[in-house]
Image (cartoon, rainbow, N blue to C red; front, top):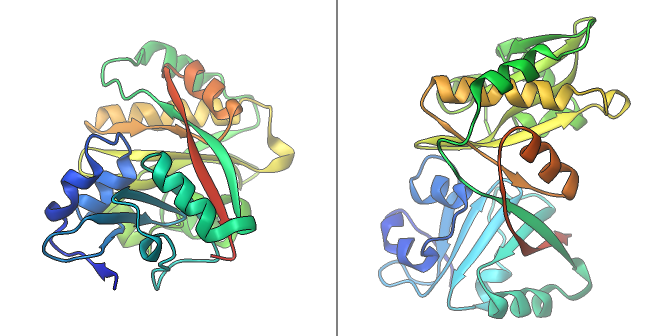
Length: 254
């Protein structure tokens, strides 16, 4: 049987030094949940937040197949090691699409604030930038392409408490944004999205730089994890450094 763990400290050692902020969000009980095979002495654990889950400890098929009540039909599943990787593939078969994701180093003193401000100032004429307020929060939530900028926050009050974000506007329409996909006690996990017809105009670069500066001014770390090489390139342009690639699975019909 699988249980939701309230005393998340009991699962910390299973995740070890896994440098993934969404795991930290769950363990710190800021956002997300931890599920285990035993409430007192867990041997297997899953950190679950939004469209992501992270499997650690002893590989257990029951846990890999477990579907939390608030999950959707799609999940990105990250295995702690090769044994978990093989188990996920066995459990989900053709529903599991093996992908590579790209971890970015977490370096607190790496950012050049002057260069980031120049990136903000590079925003093309005709566009403007604004911090996410209640109206913009709701507009992001109502549009499919921008929903992930705020999707993990039940309402604006929760976002005010735990989130942070900026959007790019053109003629009062949101065309790009950089926001916290999730938050943990000392930082956020960065999410950047641009409306398809406005891509390749430097909007993600400008609003990404603005979000990093806002984080630094608040003593928060803007963690970045890349879905593709384009995201890696943008991160490096903003001052981050690539760490390593890792295996994950996109599970359809979760």
